[in-house]
Every structure is written in structure tokens, then in C-alpha cells.
Amino acid sequence: MNNLNSILIEGNLIRDPLLRSTPKGTPVCTFTIASNRYYKQDTAYEKEVGFFDVETWTKLAENCYNLGHKGRGVRVVGRLKQDRWNDVEGKPHSRVTIVAEHVEFRPDFRKEDPPARTQAEEAENLPRGEIPVELESVEEEFAAITF
Image (cartoon, rainbow, N blue to C red; front, side, top):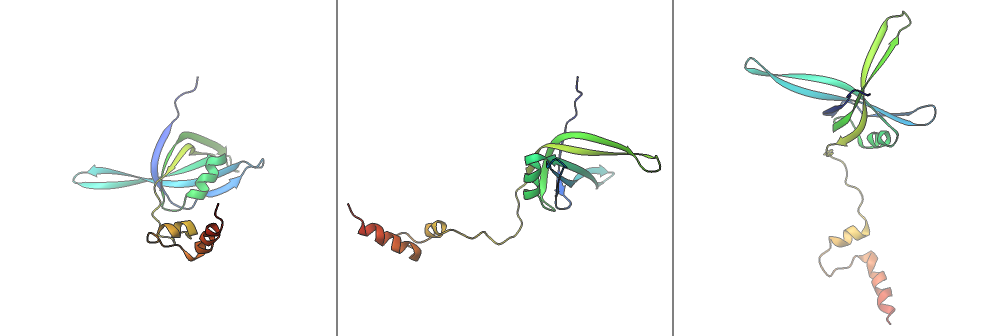
């Protein structure tokens, strides 16, 4: 029987995600999040920051790579995975990572140039009754075809 191994964590990406592939071509995205914890020490509040490595696989990995960037807020649901190995001197090492099963990104408020607008979007913003120049010829063609 499996034991419970589940984690939910919120924080901000400390750098842009890294996307790589396994030898068989499976996408793997890794990123690190910083999660803040505040607690009261005597009369003042103290801040404790934890840094957590996260890995995602397949389609979720591609989505995280495309949507994530340094500073963006994120909520991760997943499980903990412990890797153990011995270095060249035989000294044992261990690392715990989060294997994400679900990732949510907070809204992105970066200031960027707005995307180019289509003719239809431009036409929606014209005062009522005005026809954009690009569409005048189309309207004339439809007016010439009467049944």
C-alpha cells in the first residue's frame, strides 16, 4: 500500500524555467520557487524564505516553460521525490524535489507591448455607422451582388 505523499506550495519563480528532454524525447521542465513564511518573534514579524526545486513532465512541462518567467507567482500541487547518490569520494548525498502534477500561474502583470489588433477588432472600436477603409471595398462588392 502507498503512503500519503502530497504537497501544495505557493511562491514565485526565482529564474526562468529550463526545458530539456530525456534521451527518448520526453520534455522535462525544471524551475525553482521561493516561498515566504512570516512569523512573530517577540513584537516584530520575521520573514523566512524557502527555495524549492520543481520538475514537470510531458505537456505540463511545455506549458510551464511557455508560461513561466522569473518573478511570476505560481501554485504547485504534487509529490516529493528524494534522489540519493554517492560522489566520487563515496560521500552520500541527497536532494528532495517536487514532482508537479498540477501547476497554476497567477495573472501576469508584466508591462509589454499589446499584441497587434486585427481588422475586426479595429472595426469594433469605430463609432457606430463608420466602416474601416479596408472593409469599404468589401461592402461595395456585396452591394453590387443583389438578388
